[in-house]
Image (tube, rainbow, N blue to C red):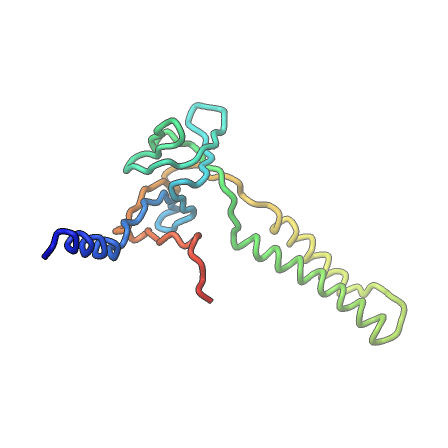
Length: 176
């Protein structure tokens, strides 16, 4: 076999080998993943005994720390992580706002268009719709913006052999 053909075969075979997966930084609550960060993601955090909130990007992940732009931060020095999240209560609150508004609008549509009367407020409909709006609006709008790292919430670097690992699907394009 000629060296040139051997070289071409080796290049073709090496292109088939899948690339190794990136490590991920996960925030765990007991055994549930609350937040998953990849290298290159924005990382907003506060260190223990400091007042300032730092914003940087994740450069690399290690077993017991994270390398940000110009510094390596061990996990035990991180006091709080800031991120946006939506909980089940936020979704229930959104449903209650839609329900309260929809009930009021459907009742007014029924009174004016179907029955042909002047717009009026039904006591039961007003009570239910205002109650749903009054309870649902705060539930929808109040969101936790940060999480303190403690015994219940902890940071962990995971690789592809971990049960907490999930492939990065953010940049995949659907063929459909």
